[in-house]
Structure formats: structure tokens, C-alpha cells
Length: 289
Image (cartoon, rainbow, N blue to C red; front, side, top):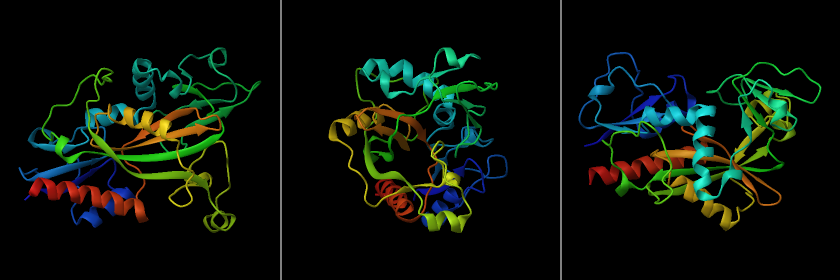
């Protein structure tokens, strides 16, 4: 019988802990005395570093080599920009530069990203025209005003090749849709209520839409995504070499969309946790049948 183990990007991850509890399995450290067995299925929850026991691992969901590309903002943007041209979707990537004079390439306000592998708006400094521009590893423009969504995908069970070697150099496959997966859950980012903000002691900030700034991903009263946009996002998803992931996108009032990031360790609670548990259990049932 195939048994799951959770390999999280940090052992204290609330979502990884919740998933382990829901799947009734253990989390494993990267550098301790865990020894993978032939019937263990490693679920990598956002970790981009190969553990010391990696060579003894047979089955890995979301290989660290692939996760590394999508957790590093600069690697992610460069890979996506280079390959999106093949689909005629260059505008689906936000404008960015690593130049120390970003004002020559980007419109204000400029988002100065001092960290490349962070989340929840950490490491972002926003500068307006006339402000001093601080040193940063990456500079991006502000996203157009619009609706933000998180779309969750899982590779189709019969398309899983658990022992396949990772692609050292990630690339899109414009001539074919290499990875068969399905969309199983959709969320939309919305403002917290005034009461919730007060309860948590947060101050609302519309410039960086993170949880600490008063934003949450909701599942109720979602504004539907136009089918033509949804199909383009699904085409993107079928070219991502991950077994499970969430695509964060922004869609403006004119129907133009941009990828914000690919999330390999999305927040899990409530319905979202239930959906992920169901997907992993479906996979385990398939592998054990």
C-alpha cells in the first residue's frame, strides 16, 4: 500500500500540518533520520531543496528542482516571459527589470523586491516618482486594477510518472501540451470585513494584497472568469511540470490577464483543505487499486 509523507518547506507550516493531519500521515525533516521506503509517496509542500535522503526516494510529487523555479520570483518571470511568446501571451507576464535604474523601463509606482523567494508581500518596497529607489533584486510594475484569482490544478492520476527525472532546465512545450491536469478549485481575493480587520488588529492596504494587509482568498460570490481567459490559463497549466500547484492571476476590467505567481504551497483551510485532501486521497486510491 502506498503511504503519503509530507515534506514541507518549513516544519511549522500551518497548511502542511493541516494536510498531514487530514491525510493521517507524518511530516518529514530534510536532514534527520527519515528513511524513505518503497511504498512511501513524498508530497513536497513548497520545498526547493533536495533533502539528504533524496537519493533513496522513489516517488516524489513536485520535485524540488521544479519547485525552485516557481518559488524564485526572478527565475519564474524570466522562464515565463521567454516561453509565453510561443503562445502569443507575452502580455500575461508583468513588466519587470533587474536594472539599478528601473525608472527607465517601468512606470511608477515601482515595486522593489528585496527578496526573491518570499510571500505575503515580504521584502517589497513601493516607490513613487521622486522617491529614492533602493537596491533590490527585482523591480516590477503595479498590477492593473482588477480581480485576483487563485486557480488550483492537480495532474491527472493516469498521467503521473512518479519516478520520472526532473527537467534540469525548465521550458515550455509550445508544440504540445505535455502535462495533463485538471482544475479542481477556484478562489477569488477579497477584502476582509471591517470587523475581521479589527479582530485581527490588521490595517487595510490595497497596494500589497496579503493576508496581513486585509485580504483573503474567498470561495463564495466569485465573479466568473470568462471562458476564453480560463482556456488560456488552462493551456498554461498544461505546460507546468508540477503535480499540484495554484496559479495566481490578475484580470483587469478590459479582460487582460497576468500571472502573478505559481504557488507550490498554497494556504489550506476549510473547503480548500478539503479539496486538496480529496485530490490526494483520489490519487492514493488510484495508485493502490
